[in-house]
Amino acid sequence: MSEPVVAQKSPIPVEVEAGKTYYWCSCGRSKDQPFCDGSHKGTGFTPLAWSADKSATVYFCACKHTKNPPLCDGSHKALDD
Image (cartoon, helix red, strand yellow):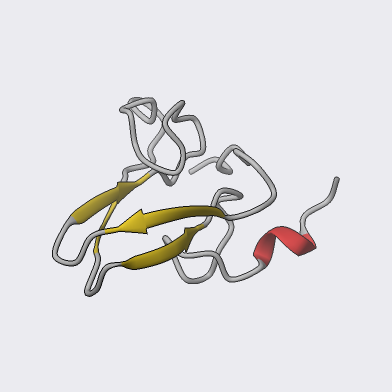
């Protein structure tokens, strides 16, 4: 599998709703970041389903290198410019 596209080097804050499922873009190609729009087709990447356990602001990873997908873990800070 190839490396994902870095959509941006900072997390994307999203107000999530308890009980709702979100589909995080793992390839970085989606125009609807941080969520999947189907742009991964043919890349070997697939979206990751994530369900909110409570309503809150969540910081989704946009660099696609997090070790805690789909949430930001600060991995973007170690990426080359």
